[in-house]
Length: 615
Ligand code: ADP
Ligand code: MG
Image 1 (cartoon, rainbow, N blue to C red):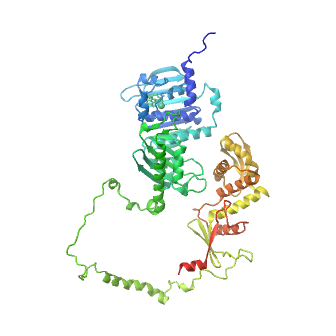
Image 2 (cartoon, rainbow, N blue to C red):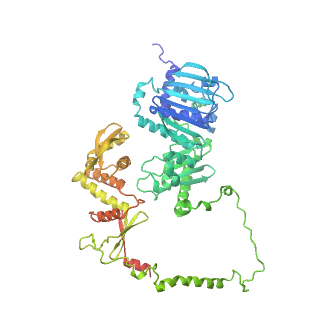
């Protein structure tokens, strides 16, 4: 029998390699953006058509390429970034494999225009499925512009495998944000079809984060800074009360490269211990700088995973520096966040060494010698005591018109009607409520004070209502004017199918459940359309974390999760009617004292205890 082994032609090898590098349009975006950064670009524009299925184009003002380099750049293992294996341990570029352009050119129509600053004319190369179709001189701006059209045109299976435009665009935006967050000094823009999604001027880390995630982000950020021998940490964590229900805002960058690290993520979460609400994910934007020789980024083709030499130490340092930052914030929130900027250290003082204060001694000072100066404490007191006494004068007479007679104010009147409780209850709620700290509803009892946690109380009320509608009589729903289409992962869709019937009892109407999306035409009357996505996301996350064992616990978990998401949060201002609605609703519940997860809903403060405090 003759030999059977032969070498694969280059274009086939490239197609196979492309499978590793390019999974979807977002992978191309990442590679092209990284190449522009490696080329020292200061301005990078990303143009996308139809979620990258039609066009991905990156224009930069970096160093550009010579005619020969332009051609070579599409060869496999062609790179300008490393020359030997040792270089892998001192990487300061994003790319190094020399595979990206070759892979992309194997599975798309690519057009490259590039010019170096020193050259008058540039070059334009067109490639289709690894074959160069034309190369000619071109008058183009300094820098490089690469268009990638009809991705996967020659691999239909791949192309058909792509998700909906919304999903693919989400991936592109994710990649774009990661790169932009890692390089705040570079200006980036992203244009999809005809609309501009991002226009990010060159700035600093804080501004870049805020520009990407929205104006309110700034006030949520707590700075983290630490420098040790093995690592430098800078960046921000989100204040605990703004923690998210999903992992959306968690970013690690190591040497300016976005990475995923469940291990370091754990360190951050550990630092937040005790500060987060149930199943909330802290936001973080952490920039770690380590010796390039102490990491291995070579272990994954798309380079988002990384291996550290000394990950135990990194864990401990990360955790403690975040704890420290959060601690400072907790102890002195006023200083940290609502501070008067006038009290801040001026920037030019910040890095100056402190100078020792001069000590001046008045050798002639004699503490026993009486003199009329300000050092005479007793006379100072006497002078003021006159004014102090005058504070009383108005009260004694009580005869001017604006004066309030304290004796006439009655904080609580026995005659107030509106007893909310059946006879026999000892706690009587009067119809006077007010809100404290946007979190507690305070009400008076006949012999004390009632302090209700508004979120917990509302959760209890909704929980009991939901249980009733799921098990006894279905709730009404509000029809949506336009059906709402939400995207979910396959796993989530599977979960959703399992609880669809129960959800419909609460007022949801699902008109269609596809493999990666659902269409909703009706929702419970108690929520607004804008809340639906967040609510279902949370619900599915809860079901992923806690698999119910039987039907009863499924209903319970569903009611618990929905109640929690739907309930008013602490931090929401409530008017008197809303406050009373909650108080009334709570005490009409079967179990008003505890939340569905067994936390206390309210406390009472009897008059005797108050009296003790005044002894
Ligand atoms: P790698 O980035 O791993 O070196 P690529 O296939 O992504 O491999 O790119 C190959 C080479 O092409 C790079 O090493 C670089 O010299 C050149 N190149 C790619 N994109 C650009 C760009 N936007 N500007 C200048 N040179 C580029
Ligand atoms: Mg590259």
